[in-house]
Length: 207
Image 1 (cartoon, one colour):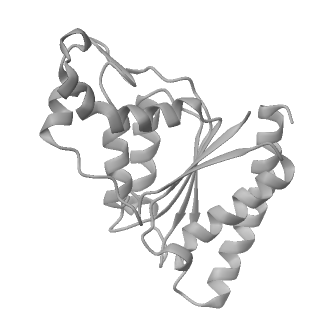
Image 2: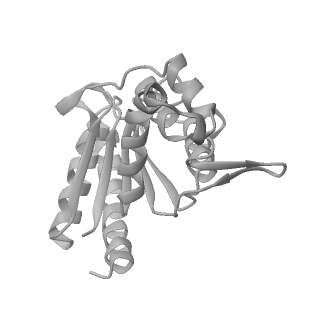
Image 3: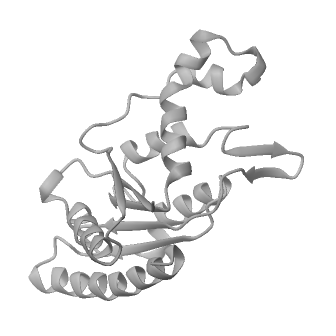
């Protein structure tokens, strides 16, 4: 059964432009892929606990040396990684804060980007250990985004590629606080993108 993992990074709930974009995208997918299962993580409204020293120590320890305490420290990380592994599609809805991603999304990444679990280490560098799948990011901003000041998109692209997920695309919903006309333009852009995205997923999932 196909599964969509939705990571919502905005703390604004129903007021969030990125959350609204995700809801309409998921609704379109459900209309075209009726058996689609949705797994949702409201990272912005229910943040994960910060990564602590116990998680870091356990993640760096050889698996054979881990005891009950280390396994407990890794339990949430393992749960989040498994959610990622079983997903068919990852949809991230997030604001852009101060030129990059919110802390809540960065924290989730720190749980799932783990040495010897989601990426391997070698003399040649890091190599992803997860099977590739589509990662799509709906990123909202109150004003315009200059490409030179967008540190969120290249960061997300690189970090997902590090764990093996190279099928990446970010859709920018800009100027969402600059009046009705700007919002309407972004909505039109989103609608056009959604049509193509649904078609791509139907082909990929053989619906």
